[in-house]
Image 1: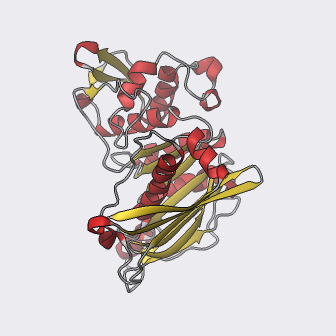
Image 2: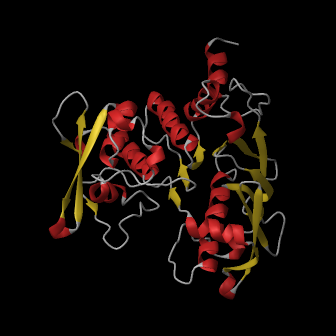
Length: 358
């Protein structure tokens, strides 16, 4: 698993070091550095793949000009990224430096890349779903060239389901109650969609135009509707479920704002879904603005669906100089907070106090 990330001199981040868990949650105010940490991690994986593989076109993020991404308060001449990978009791490190290149672009230099990191990146996938995800469409592109990719925007999730829905899910350990639900990707996706929102999905491939159509039905009947005729949240969550079940053990799933268009109950239940597959070997990194996602994590710890020691929760805010301040939230075995920085999902209580005249 990826056990540690260090980011130095990047955007609003002077220096931030994060110990990751099998389930890591990033929360905080807008523009405080959550996405920047994810971008740093994805860029390290991207450059690591290019460093270890002769042919790769993996591209999660484009950073742009060095002058735009360095920390202007710090005034640094270089940006440092570090990543540790833990396998058993062995930890391997990768260290990367970004400097100003031609035309002020950011040029990456690999300072150290230990064998354990090289092996990990070569053997495992990082599946990333940005906040800017594909939503409701009449038809989705069929990904013929790279059929097992989901896409950074989830644009190929339905292609993946259409092409591999009848096959067993890629990681048998992720299958929920296989004797009752079945091992096929279709069955597993529909089990979780039913639990989350009460819907099922089916896909039809139109080979003549390389498109795939997604249709949805309420789990209480067999009538299927086009995506435009069901709630938007159904489409958004379906892509996330497909993406998660496309992974294998020791892969990394990174999702920005999983709560988009979701009812609070579905948000909480989605955390239960992620907790289940995380417990079976998938490393999960979430960035969220939702207290329902956060409390869903706490609830899973209390119910022992997540082990406290496998969870890392961080809160980010900005100081008076608009620099990132990073807090690691300590949760006990009951999911209760042992430290609580002001601003960590306090708004409900603040609003309630005003309503009650306090």
